[in-house]
Length: 397
Ligand SMILES: Cc1cc2nc3c(=O)[nH]c(=O)nc-3n(C[C@H](O)[C@H](O)[C@H](O)COP(=O)(O)O)c2cc1C
Image 1: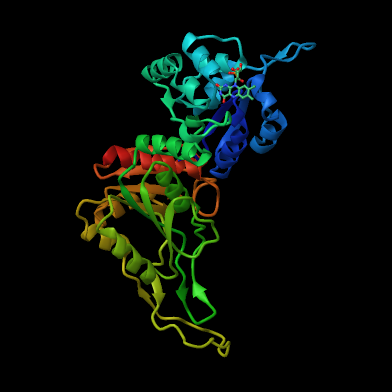
Image 2 (image 1 turned 90 degrees about the vertical axis):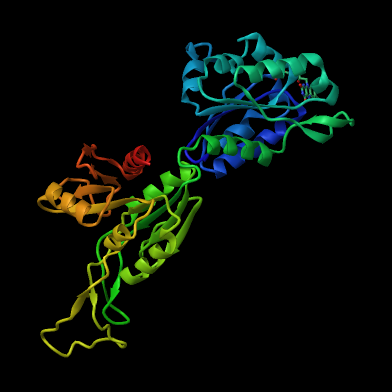
């Protein structure tokens, strides 16, 4: 949920400001990009150096960066950059100013400019928190769409005990994670994706394979998981790390892939078959290494069971999407495959297009739907191609 998100963390002058270091670290671990804004008073509790080092970005505190040259920090740009803003810890003072619409600190001006979701995590002594002004301010902020991450009960810096402790960093992160999960477009959907090549054994040492790197299928799995889907990725032999929040099943041959795919198929909402599965396998692989005794050597191959065809025949509720990598008569061949295999859509990529197909980080696709409607996309990074494919799938669900 948080991978790749632009996070604007604003830190104010609470004794709990030291916990902002842990919050930054957690966001970075989750793959987010973090920029930190600090108030003057927060710098008395934790240094900008700590937060800039952890966030890998300079901390912003003032409107003007350099008085002599007139270089300034752009609160509007920063507000627009953010996918969400988190004010943690938020003092009673800053809460009141957020409500009042004050803009006398860089933090406040950025808050007023931000169009993204805003979360506040208050931290203060129990009586400050209970005070009608603070409670009223929180209600006003909520009514304006700001999400309040409630402080926790416990021992406070004053020595008193009560509600007011900044929520623990992991609870703050999971609150935000759950917020985005609720918005996720594929939440509650199960998606099965295949990727990579298959290897068909000739003997214990050699195999028949192909050039598929698995990058396209892995990109689709990554994006589907980031949209909240439950993703199962059945992958042939590739050297790619598993995307986050994806159940990965590694297989070798076409028959292994068929076995794993059919186990998962019944409960899936969407199936995207991006793997380059062997059409033929060696009829009788040798149990021992074949010696080079003859000048000519031939192998008997037999057709593998067609996984897409099998899935098309046994479809109940699934949206079934196949891939066609063609070298000639591309559209015509893809349309034939779409129909013959009872697919809902087919993703066509042509080896004739520069930057498309195997091993590259980019791809250029045309999606052909069951009704023969075609949507062509430009050459893009495979992660962006994955978004296009999933957008089409979502529109068909
Ligand atoms: C040691 C110390 C701890 C403080 N802790 C808090 C706190 O946890 N919450 C709070 O609302 N104010 C706290 N304050 C008061 C704020 O620092 C003060 O209201 C300040 O003006 C807040 O400025 P800011 O909101 O611009 O960061 C504390 C002050 C001191 C000296």
